[in-house]
Length: 306
Ligand code: FAD
Image 1 (cartoon, rainbow, N blue to C red):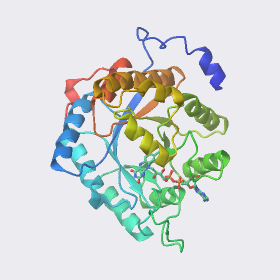
Image 2: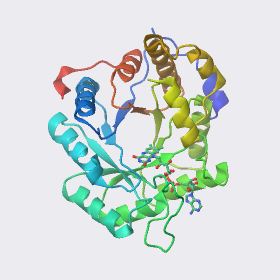
Image 3: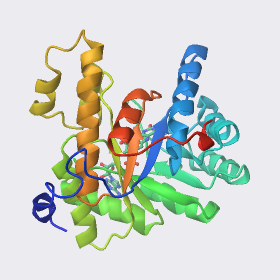
Image 4: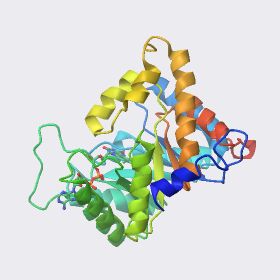
């Protein structure tokens, strides 16, 4: 489907708040908290978000994939305490293959059946083992996971190419390699340029990449932090977004109102254009994700509360 064709029906069903949208699958990302206070905040968020029935919730990990940093225990707690389908991120950038294999085997043995397979960012000193002791790229990790267990595997995709990619084509080829190696879903980096997301979707369709595309959405809780983080991960911050948050640095209430609208508008447009899975980067906070879900017509149901 071309983006232009999509645009022509952007004014059709679902474009306005009064018009119902097709049902989509939603999922939420959390990160392991580092203090008792952060832990309490996380669980407040989980309790408020669980009733929206996410297909799954995912838990980030550090670049070494080390579950001791809290990923494995949070995955377990989300399953046991909140009865959620919890998915572990696993990165391979810094730990040797044998260590990564052991972590994956432990996940399999403990009943975790879905992994987000990532390379992770290389160490800051830039030194990386190239002697074959490490999985070099996420595609290598996907192939290894396939050998270890019948995991459902999701991988990262980049509507704006990954900063280290030699070219847009090379980055797309990498995504195809990851799917060909056995991944079943691509989850995008957040991207405020919705046209770029739709171009990636269209390109996957044209290339016959059948894996579903789950679009990552970052609610802007703090615009200054988003700008700083985006510089590091290569995500663009468009001028229109800067204009919307201009002058609101010291006004968190107004920032939140603007952010809810930005998040919901992007989500609505994606759904109208045919995207069927949305993945919210919650930053362990519930309010903006809830606002967006409600504006999409989703309602919480207490039957699934944590
Ligand atoms: P890869 O797919 O291996 O790609 C990395 C780079 O290498 C790309 O530029 C690619 O084009 C290039 N490349 C791949 N193969 C080759 C090759 N054979 N030759 C040359 N170049 C190649 N980071 C964390 O630390 N923890 C997390 O929990 C985490 N979760 C994430 C979740 C999602 C949904 C996303 C989108 C990102 C996440 N990240 C996380 C960030 C991610 O780890 C970084 O973006 C990382 O730099 C790349 O990881 P990747 O899996 O995309 O790597």
